[in-house]
Image (cartoon, rainbow, N blue to C red; front, top):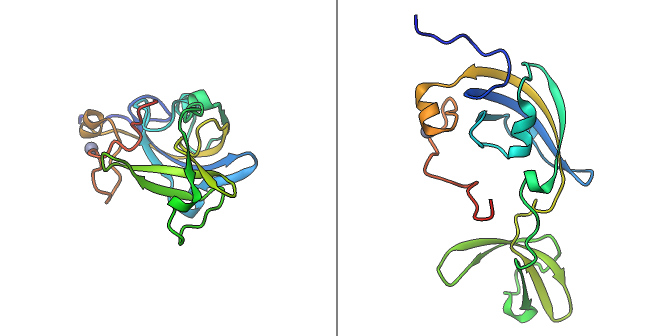
Length: 178
Ligand code: ZN
């Protein structure tokens, strides 16, 4: 038989199933309890580098708290990535509140994500940085399962989940400032 032995610790080329909670400034931003655990291929930057690095050697059932600095997460905030827009340029139905996320179409017809960052009497400041840029991320993770990656997964550089479709066409984490 040509079967690889099941991996017992997190290592390169291992598909990891992991529960996680992400806290930023004491606020829970995201947790797998409300969706599904994360399934990813270790060693291929499928997850942010500062988190991936801290997972090596963990066993199934292990929990760990990982603090990720901006430079190992979503990068520092780019001070150039802000734009001041007159309030009147916004359609009335858009709630002009700090924290509102907007999709904006630029001249090249590309969709950009922006967050309303500041609102004054006359203008609205948009922040085009990733919402987690400049933030220190606090992850509480638990390793739920480990398995050897298939040849196909290694070739593609990502995990294939059970009934999920292959998503290799979408380079959604591949941002310019990374
Ligand atoms: Zn694939």
